[in-house]
Length: 169
Image 1: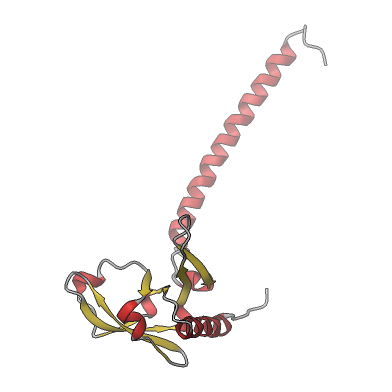
Image 2: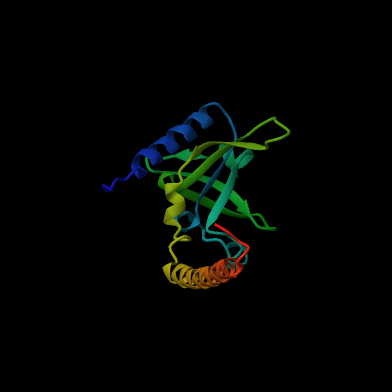
């Protein structure tokens, strides 16, 4: 397959959607690749140690009001932890995985309006080849043993059927 890079198009689309939501005064959430997000000042370890590779930001209230849009990234002010530690958050549009808006529907709290699954691949959570290879080889060995046992049982059953003179084919 020919190499292609959709990231610039998807980043531009994420930027356009966010700009539209801001213009319409619609609060939203973004999920993004944490490794590409910048915090100024840096968050204390007791806060950041609990983060996962994909981080979710809810942009409402003061956080929503503080959003600034740049060409390649957005920024906003947010508070973290029990002490509401203040930090300026900078998110490149290219690392946004999902944008969601709240609904008034009792069945579905939020609805996804943008998704960039290419960014999930960038996390590397599916690339641990050593673990995959070991597990894959182990699974293959188990399947081979099961197939051999099944073949033996079928052969034994076939011999039993053929050894009985009352069975006719």
